[in-house]
Amino acid sequence: MKLLVTGGAGYVGSVCTAHLLAAGHDVTVLDDLSTGHRDAVPTAAAFVEGDVATAADDVLNGQGFDGVLHFAARSLVGESVVDPAKYWHGNVVTSVALLDAVRAHRVPRLVFSSTAATYGEPEISPITEDSPTRPTNPYGATKLAIDHAITSYAAASGGELGAVSLRYFNVAGAHRPTDGPMLGERHTTETHLIPLVLQVALGEREHVSMFGDDWPTPDGTCLRDYIHVDDLAAAHLLALDAAGADGGHLVCNLGNGTGFSVREVVEACRRVTGHPIPAIVAPRRAGDPAVLVASAERARTRLGWAPERGDLDGIVADAWAFAQAMRVGAGA
Ligand code: UFG
Image 1 (cartoon, rainbow, N blue to C red):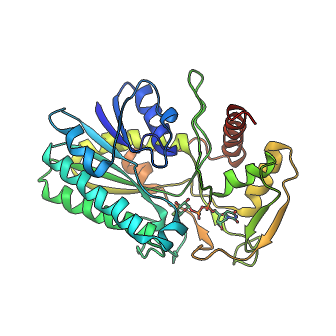
Image 2: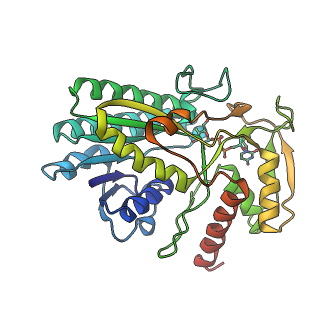
């Protein structure tokens, strides 16, 4: 298929681009490089540097694209609270412009990066796609708004547009192909647990702070559902097929269905790196739910998806290999 990948210079977008190319697709990446990295875009992909909101129409015009995978987004929960305009414009306004271009140029398939943050504080665990959607921050609210926009554009297309939203839980790990460069998480502002813990093992920070140890969980720290980025990418390829099959808009969670605590993650990082990784208990972080675990039953039944890399030590080992490679690459 001829595919447009927005945000293909970012963590998840670049790994998905590598998987799409390996499966034989023809990929064009559109990214403004505001948070992504040009060198993360696999060389076999065409690259257009530009803002999705203004460039998508031109890129799609008359080119016969079979599908769009839309990763480009602002994705920092804390930043979204402080600077909501950046999220309503950068996520919602941009995505509506992309949807207009998709409609105008009759692109038949759309796969969208949605998030567990659309649910907010869950009432039941594991979270199904029928759970209430009550986001607790602007980031989740903007992703939910885009999901709603996609539903209405797909419905109004009379079957011309088929869409799948994939609600990611905690994406982690790195893509380590036998025949190409590693791709992983490289954020200027790092807020995610596993890369932060690995920074301690690299000697870049003295300790990790565990945000609260008095949560209603077995060891008092928060539980999250960590999913390997390669498993996540595999779901996108399946979603492309599903989007073409029956029109409409399908929403699927992507997670392993298992929660690991912050303490368990720190212990896994100690095992993998052999570093003692000092950890201190810090106050709770605002907006954190105690437990976020996915039911991915729908992705299994509707997409035929079966995650293969759910082992926490394996996820951490890949993230660690990438973190070390980046450090060497940076001349550290
Ligand atoms: N945590 C710490 N110390 C840190 C960083 C994180 O204890 O230094 C804890 C958090 O409190 C949380 C867990 O580690 O309990 C995971 O935190 P992350 O920031 O890695 O991930 P989140 O679960 O907060 O966020 C993820 C995605 C978001 C998405 C959210 C859904 O990264 O994009 O799930 O709620 F919005």
